[in-house]
Length: 84
Image (cartoon, rainbow, N blue to C red; front, side, top):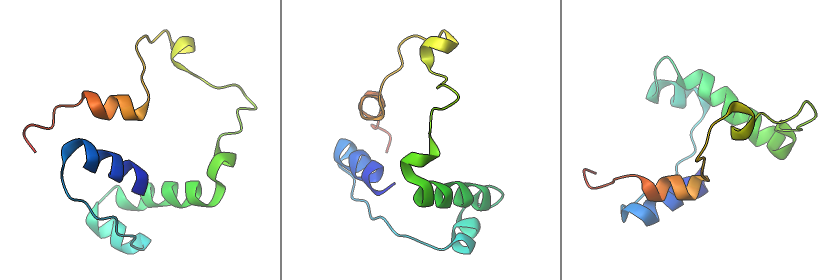
């Protein structure tokens, strides 16, 4: 998450700061969704690349018939930040 925030900061020219909080604090920041998102982030932190084994195949844009998918960096570069 920190590297994603760094990318966003560089593209927008906005100053950012990454702050790690515990699950209860995150839940207070994002009512209704904080606990669920927090569990997901904890899982990814624990399992890393092992979260995505691909053993059952990977459902990608081609399999879904979706055209024009881009990587995160390209997507961030395409967004309009003029109102921020």
